[in-house]
Image (tube, rainbow, N blue to C red; front, side, top):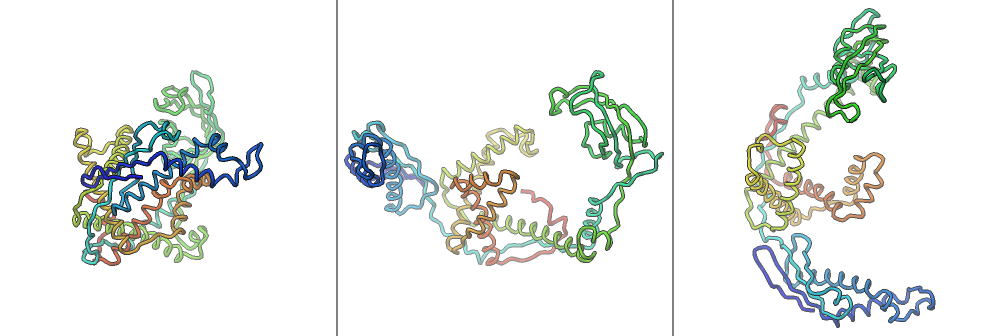
Length: 445
């Protein structure tokens, strides 16, 4: 086996590898002898299948296994001997006629390209100075939160029989929808509750029910939107023959002991404690996010080194694909609308470079500090991910368990957060009290 470094430019390395056909044959013979004792083939006693027959029947597949294993071993050996830390999986380009190689009639030759990790010394994290904004939960926030909670638990009580409906009321109706005088599928309902002003029905439907009273019959003339999901109804004019059964007015409950007990709690004080904890949790999360952003800015400013080109390109392509998907969906950021494609690519490539640089810095700081994530933390993250797909949890878990790349993407943010927490514990962090509005205000960048 011959391994020769043929190129070294920046952080890119290329190795030429050559394995004689005789060595391949020797490894194939060894692999055949390894599996022969356990082979069961018709016409042969168990464990007594001749090597020549195994080679005839399975030689091609076995040689493929030998080559794959040999390529991986050679790549690892080349990197270890050169004392290089790869910044990703090596890119292998096979040379020559592989059909001849598999037949054992030619040497195995290939080139291996790999980006290596840059050599740098991370900043001493104990010297970093970070300002962390914090906010206390005010009485006004508590009152607003409790008011919103009561609003979410409002009930609708019947108005008088002669009372007319208002915006915000709930109206119980029967209706039959017709197009050109003929009923259409899905256009009829009985005892349907329509919340006026909710926007859940097609435009004009709810609005024409404002001012109706119990027992009233009314025809609602509407037009289905052009982008309505059903092509058979999109853009069509329709009439809904409607009968009103009841008009109900919203009643917001008082926030008192009975309200708290209605939510399954012991007392109003317990409800207030829980609401305050939730609000404080929101504050703490926002505070950490601001501190993390400030920390990443400090780390970015403190480091300058060459970046593995393939890592930057992969990160850029991921960002660019996301941007194009947003643009195709008509969600282009206002700041990007008037920029050319070249300008956008230049800006987002810089973002990709920042992400790669910070990823390498955080990884090196974590390595030096021996930051590790537990299997329990990974499993908890996997369960959270699976719960986002109700009814498909088992398939999601199986997918991650069978795909090392997907599992690595699941582990990465866990590791990053632990490294960030480690730095914030060691760095000089100063808390600065701000208002809730300032705490949740978006940064300019």
